[in-house]
Image 1 (cartoon, helix red, strand yellow):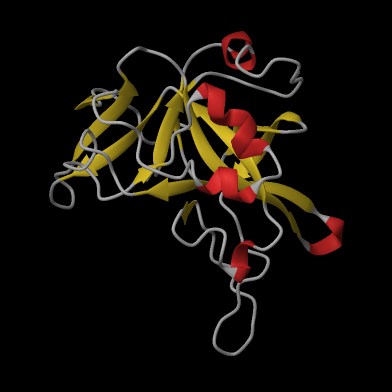
Image 2: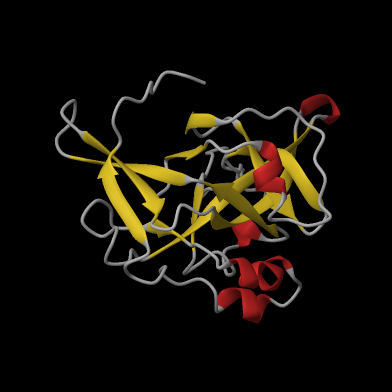
Length: 204
């Protein structure tokens, strides 16, 4: 969780939650945002686009070779301990909601999970910059997950760490202990889980 999410409100509404943080890049509301795509991310330095999916710079296999597997979600229980995440920064991924699936393969039901009050969700996330051949630099991001709350547990065994707006400065700030205290399930009763309806899962 999340494997897909949606952000459908206009850019001005999203940016208004991050005072003083301008954004001049391309943006379009999307109902189906998938790993590997560029997504809107807020850091202490501003709002920008990053690729959803981290290639951990410190992750190695048993032979000591770098692992190139892309990680879209990092477990809250180990995110501050694993060498694979050494040196990452903390950021926020805004969303209107996300999707989960239940059922058998090819007969799965898609569920949309939204806040009851219609507000914006703030996913806790981590980021860094991947260095590729020829000097290529790719900012990359992964959301942080935790145990599910009562709203989500029937559709998935994990959920993204959601932050109250007042806690955003603590997550983006330098104090790791304060940030660690925020990595817990969202309080019960604040999310609605309903059938996703007609979503074009092939749309970019």
